[in-house]
Amino acid sequence: ALNKSLLKWSYDFDYWDIPESFLCAPVPSRCDYIHHIADLLKVDVMDVKNGPQQQIRGLDIGVGANCIYPMIGVAEYGWKFVGSEVDKTALQSAKKIISKNPSLQDMVEIRHQPNKNKIFTHII
Image (tube, rainbow, N blue to C red; front, side, top):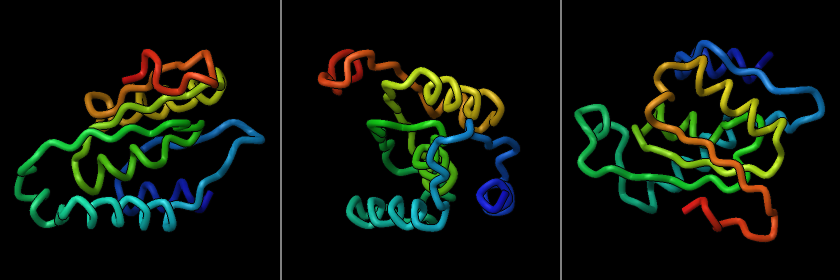
């Protein structure tokens, strides 16, 4: 319930839910991670709000059922993402999150990787 509330209050996402037994990623620490990446890329939130100066596309290997990194990256910086996932239940959950949040629909693409030993094959 806390993650769902934080995602609604901070980023205006209407839907976020994950199947039982899947990782419930803490939003604040995941947000910090995205900000660290932005620092490395020298991206400023204020610059993004005035229009992105460069289009950044992230790759989330093992996006999980929660799709949290793409959600925050889109909301904070306008980044586009490809997320890969081997677990079909997690894959469906991530796709559902995207489909129920219009701001994610043209920004995040989830791809199934059926072979966990070939994480990049047919993903990039």
